[in-house]
Length: 79
Image (tube, rainbow, N blue to C red):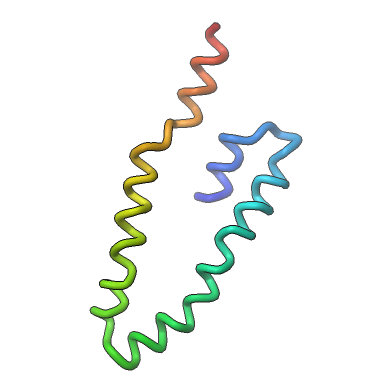
């Protein structure tokens, strides 16, 4: 899904830069995975779900406020 979003937003010549930047920005979250495994082993899965809840809510909030790139392209191309 991440790469599809970059394809929608970026001009064809800049897509590799968008995808690379996106991977760099997301990589710290992959590094947290072992910590989540340790928390689930020590405290159980409920603790991991409670820890992930704020990030999920923030993601939904950002998603709802982000304009659809396809609609923006259609609006620009019709003028």
